[in-house]
Structure formats: structure tokens, C-alpha cells
Image 1 (tube, rainbow, N blue to C red):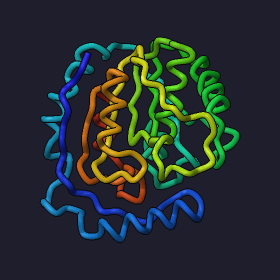
Image 2 (image 1 turned 90 degrees about the vertical axis):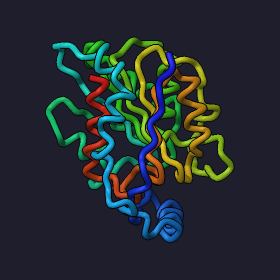
Image 3 (image 1 turned 45 degrees about the horizontal axis):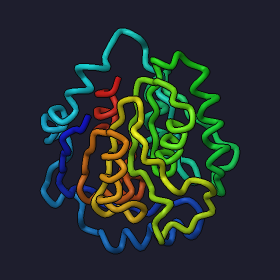
Length: 242
């Protein structure tokens, strides 16, 4: 099944944040290129909620039930810091749990996938929604291909592209990205100016995975650097899954 894409306006400002010195330097370069982008239209994504609702109405119709949902947070390289939207999500309720990896800065795909699967098996599979960011999305794609477990769904935000030339971080085994259909409902949220994945590649991943696709416009890597801290719009999107 394929889903309609939604394009939001360019409303976010980038602030400096990163993992490690090299990542922080690259984030500062992004900030320099994008200063002044915030609220250029004087609007926020909340103004476009009806369009998002229309894009994702299939999820509302097919996934909501009376069972409590358990949200598993899967950060990317370097983990997500205290101001990151994933941390905001984690602290928003009792049923949000972070998947803690042993090695955050030089990740091994097989180890990350194994850790994710162990955490998933702590819950009723039909209650699980995964919330991935950056390399966490790649982890979910590899996990889905390897284990083929039927869960409730996943939100995949800014799926970084370890096959890209600029991706030179010490991450082992994540490339190539699996292109198999994911056997549960997924939503990919991407940006037009994300240094770690082009919009075209993010859409390419979504098309192959069978995901709904949302384009946030100029939103960077959808992290602290791009102003995504208390990301209520992202929570709204997540809740359409369950």
C-alpha cells in the first residue's frame, strides 16, 4: 500500500547540537547555511494538522484499539540527548521505553539489532510501536528484515543514509539499507535539507518499505539542531499509529 505525501512549509531554525566534535562542527556548518529560516511564514506545523490527518487517516482507521501501546525509543548514533524530541517523548508517559545500546559512538548493526529484539520481546508484540531517529531507523529496517516480527507499527524520522559519501562515521554493518517491504505499518518523516539523507533517498526508502511519507520542508536532521525538542507535531504523527 502507498500513501499520500504531505509537504510542510519551511519554518524551523537550526541550533547547534551534535554527537562528538566532528558531528558538532558539521551541525554548526548547517546552522550557518540555514540561519533565518525559522518562521519565515509566521506559521507552525500545527496549522497544517488537517492535511497531516488526511495523509495518515488510514492509520487512524486501522490501528487504534483498546490495547495499551508500548513505545520503544530507538535513537541513532551517539544516543539522543536531554533536549532531543525522543527524550521528550520518553518522558511524556509511562509506556515509553528507550532501547539502550552498549556502544553508541561506534555502533555495530548486528549488536544493535539484537538489543532491539530483546527489548521488543519484553512486550506483547501487538502493542509495540517503534520510534526511530537517524541510524535508529536503519536499525529498525535491519531488524524487520531479520526477525519479521509483526508489531503494531513504527515511526521512522530522518532515516540517515550510511551509503552516502558524507556518512563517514564508524558505524559497521548498516549499509546497504534493506529495501524489503516492512510487514507492519510505518511512517517516514523526512526533510529537504537533511545532510545525512537526501529527500529523494528518504522517499526511496519509504517507497520500498511501504511507508507513509511526510516531508517537513527545511527541517534539517529533525533534531535539536533544527529546533525539534518539544516536538508536539511529531507526537501527533506518532499517535496516528497507535
